[in-house]
Length: 76
Image (cartoon, rainbow, N blue to C red; front, side, top):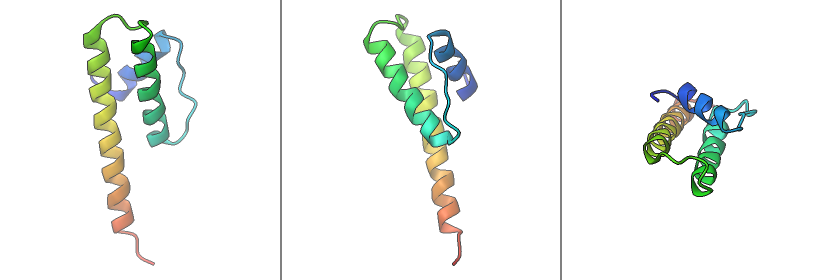
């Protein structure tokens, strides 16, 4: 697993399909679902969980930075 797409495909195998059009919302809810499935024992491989979690954290940070950058450059 290396990309957000990989995490989406991983979660899809576990029954979760992303229906959010907003990327930050999608990332947030994928992280929630990942944790719920891991806590329930549906994701037995700890490495898969931690890798997916790191990818989601990175993507969320990048989206937040992008959003902050867009806001700073917006002129009234």
